[in-house]
Length: 309
Image 1 (cartoon, one colour):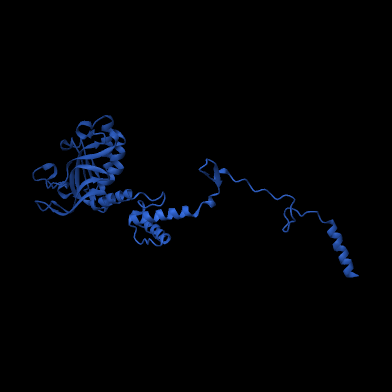
Image 2 (cartoon, one colour; image 1 turned 180 degrees about the vertical axis):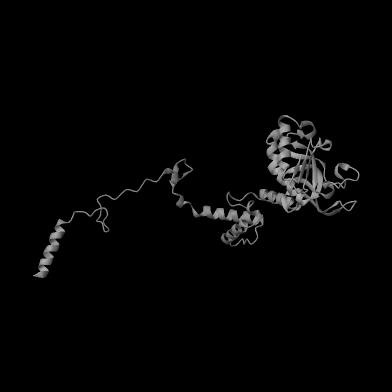
C-alpha cells in the first residue's frame, strides 16, 4: 500500500508540471523554434570574381592552403637571399622561426622586419651598407659623432696636446665646414648642444640646420694669442669656435652680421644661452673684442660653474 500511494503522488505531481521547462532549466525540453544565429557581416567574406564575371563569396577559413604555402615559400626565399644565419632551406617553418628570433636581437631587425612584410633585398642591402658605413666612421662610441680617431696628438710645448683626440667631420647629422680636432668630452658636449640647443634655436629657418662654420678648433696657443699668457683650451683639444650656421636652403646665420636683431639674431642669442651650462666657457659678441665674429665654446671646469658672456 505504501508503494502504491507513493506512485499515485508522483503521477499527481507530474500532471501539474508545466508543459515546457523555464528558460533557465538545466535540462530543457526541445523548443518550438531554435534561436536563429546572428547574420554574418559582409566584411567577413572574401569576394572573388569568376572568369564569366559572376561574383562569389567565401569565409576566410575557406582560403586554400596553397596561399599559406606560397607565402611561406616566398618568405623563405627572401630570408635566404638576405643571408639570415641558421636558415635551413629544407625546413622552412623552423627556419622562419629562427629568423624571427635572430631578427629580434640583431641590428638587422629593422631591415628584416616581418611587419610589414620583408623589404626587398636591395633595400635591405642599402640599409645595412649605410649602417656599416656609419659604424666605421663613428668615434667616441657614438654613431651620431662621425670622424676619425687620432690617438695622442702632441703639442709643440708641454702644456699642449690631446691624449685621445678625434677629428670630427659631422655631429648629430650636422656637417662641419672643416674637420675639427678635440677630445671626446668636448665632442659629446657639442653633440648635446646641437641636438638640444642649436636645432631648436634655428627651427625651420632656411629649411633647418645643414652645417656649422668652424672658425677654430685645436691649436697650441695662448688665450687670445697673447704673448706669455696661459695656454688656451684650444691647445688642449677642449674648445671650438663657430662663426656661422649653414642652412639647408644655402643661406647662413652669421655671428658677425646677424648678432643683434631679427630672427637670425634671436636664434644666435638662443644658441649662446643654451650652450651655457653645457660648456664650461661660452663667449660671444660683447664679451670682448676677440669674439665679435664667433661663438667660443670650451669644456673647461670653473669652481664657480660655467662662465658665460
